[in-house]
Image (tube, rainbow, N blue to C red):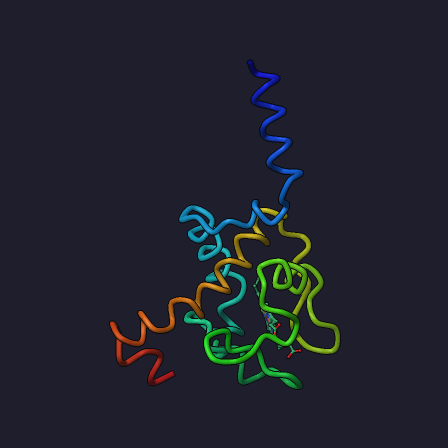
Length: 131
Ligand code: HEC
């Protein structure tokens, strides 16, 4: 029985690697935790590229995840790659020291800023005003 379950898990894994990027609540929460301690200073707590360090950045400014296009692809897999490698020639660092799970969680959290745009615009009209 245990072997069967093992086989099943393997098959799911092999069949579609993208499956492990499913956005479930737990992953988003983990992503949020990581983001709000590692990324907010540049990308801003609400993902608008307006973190406290953003103004000091020279060269390319941190991406506004809510409004701007993603230069390096906007699928969870693309974002995962960007987070893993960083962006050479900008202050965007590589985060490959974080576990794969953590980088996946971050990919989803980053994408979620955009998905949540309409909802948050409707429910909190003040948005990130004043920043
Ligand atoms: C020191 C500032 C800084 C920190 C910290 C930082 N970033 Fe960035 N990030 C940038 C800059 C600047 C860019 C824009 C690079 C460009 O325009 O080529 C960027 C770009 C990106 C992109 C690329 C979007 C696109 O256009 O394809 C992603 C994804 C991203 N950051 C995610 C993250 C995540 C997740 C974290 C935290 C784990 C993080 N960043 C932390 C500065 C930062």
